[in-house]
Image (cartoon, rainbow, N blue to C red; front, side, top):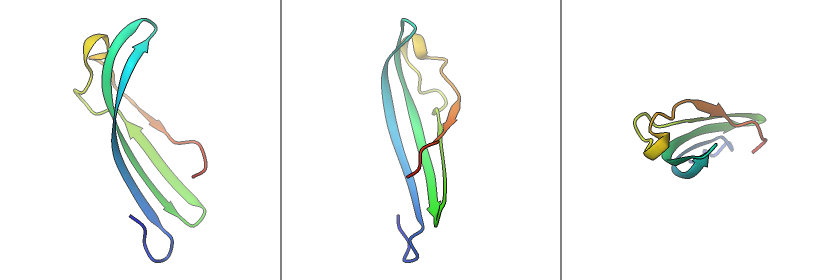
Length: 68
């Protein structure tokens, strides 16, 4: 969503499928972000309970470090 002044908000849901150090499965990431002028903020938390297979216990979050 973008406001008239150029500020914006962003949300998305992403399913990740693959392997980590030989452990295969899936999990979901929730993307949440905002932009206002030169200020950007974003986080990608793992959706609790979304892991499958060997990744069933996947948890955590990560910040977005690149410029939008």
